[in-house]
Amino acid sequence: MNERVGPVPEAVQNLQNQLNEAGLGLPEIDFDDTQKAFAHMSDRELKNTVWLFKLMANPNLTNTLSSVGLKAVQWGLPGANWAVENTLYRQFVGGKSLVSCIPTIEKFAEYGVMSLLDYGAEGKESEEDYNTSQSQLLTAIEFASKQPAVPVVTCKITSLARNGLLKELQEADFVFSDELKREYDGAIRRLDAICSVAEKKSVKVFIDAEESWYQDTIDRMATLMMERYNRNRVTVYNTFQLYRHDRLAFLMASHEEAKSKGYMLGAKLVRGAYMEKERERAKEHGYPSPIQPNLAATHDDFNAALRFCLDHYETLASCNASHNRASVKLQAGLIAARNLPRQHEHLNFCQLLGMSDNLTFNLAAAGYNVAKYMVYGPIRDVMPYLVRRAQENKSITGDTSRELGMLQKELKRRKN
Image (cartoon, rainbow, N blue to C red; front, side, top):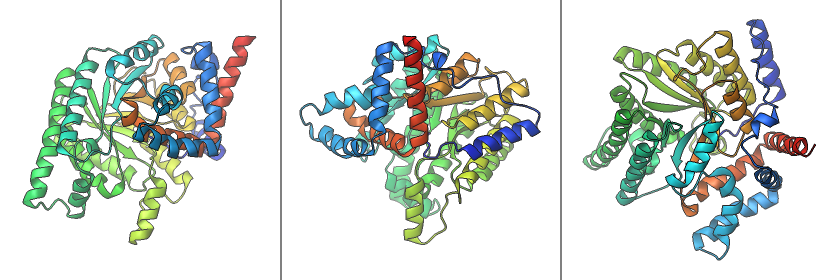
């Protein structure tokens, strides 16, 4: 759900114009209400968060932490784990284990915020690793089934199958050699076991999106699972990255396919996280870039996807996994204006743990379904995720400074 493109003034104004033309106006939610946004934080937690966001606003410190910090943890250098645990880890990770996440899950639930669980390990390359990931996911599903405030577990296909396999299958247009078929069948068995148990336990599974050169394979696997397990209710969600210019059409086509085959579509909507990498690879290999031509096109397609999901909410379950204030306002405003049930299980929002609390907790206070995306796992396993969080906050200077400003505003309010 990572977003490397944030709202710009033009996008906010365009949204306001669209809502005005539709006679909707903006929803009665004040996303600058810091008292509600940070009510779950103690004064000490608030001060620590202010300090960390100031640290992340310094590009040199962030670059050092991203490169040197990652190696220090990998090499087991003295003090490395302690330094990470008391900075990025504390802000962006729920805990080292499922049990250690419980205090945060329960605290958020007091404010009407749900939690989505994501085991942070990635980039695995052996059968033993894949089986371990499957076991971790099954354990998370069992855990979630006993936690009313945990409706979703996130699944990375890349933790269940070799990246090279996914790429080779896409390049071969699913023409299997015996070896590829054996490997693919193993991946499908692991994924099917996860989705089958989730359906029986009434837990939802979000399947993450990846780079375009093996996303088609992931789409096929996700579609197969939806066809099997989204018959009576939506258990499985595929992820649609709207910074790709073909994803809005793919979302609509996926819904048509689901209707024709008698199941419901699950759609998690994000903007995307691999923009630079995608453009560089397209240029290097001489094919058209799959990325939108500009930021405005990404915003337009994302908001069009939101409208499409709301138009078909009875047969399409969606999650607006966005940190973009304009898009969050749009969905909340449309739900309110159309008098749709805010607690309908097909109408959801989520944001990453440690970011955009002003969106999450103000949405919850207004009665919408909203969750925090909670990564968990040992420090060594979640370091790549933490590096991305630090780099993302560094690259979205406007969002980081706005969030820091709200944190400081709340500190000042509490002192007065």
